[in-house]
Length: 237
Image 1 (cartoon, rainbow, N blue to C red):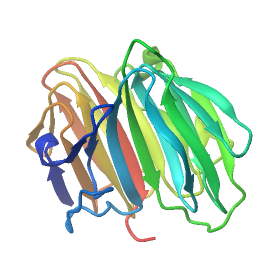
Image 2 (cartoon, rainbow, N blue to C red):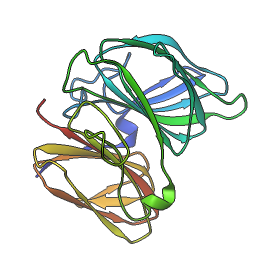
Image 3 (cartoon, rainbow, N blue to C red):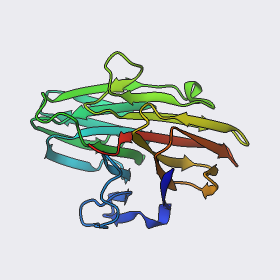
């Protein structure tokens, strides 16, 4: 088993006033040569966007982009003709493929939004761009991992062009969960959204993360009630 720990305070940080962003991996003006990616996981940004503010129209290509609002709502518009609002409790997926333009703004004029934006390298280049959006319920995440994203269009949740899975769980105090990797050649990046957990003898607090590979299953013990995001990705791609 191999692992790496990324404590919350070691993430990159950019505060633009309207945007307070934390970067798990090198992004924009923050560069750390030891934090470029974890396997096929290229970006995990933890963004807080002020009311009514956001990202104007900008391009992407050949990247799988997943947005998970934790609090608030996000207004999305893109060159594919989609104009949607994504709320906390929903997941948005875009396959940028041959190229798209989109904008993202806080849908509220009074409340901030907090979201995770995840970029995963695709296993196919120059695919036709696509958009999807799904809803999930926290009751379905109680002391179990709920699948949000997979490589398979017929599976639970939504899908992307990569042999990757994203799960979310809410764990109760003193409970233990086991994450079973879908592919033993993959690794899993566990982001502790909130609470305190123990993984491989390491205590992880709010927004601490651990990347694990060369292992088939991971045991997670809760010291307090919390929430966990598990991003399983190929390590060689």
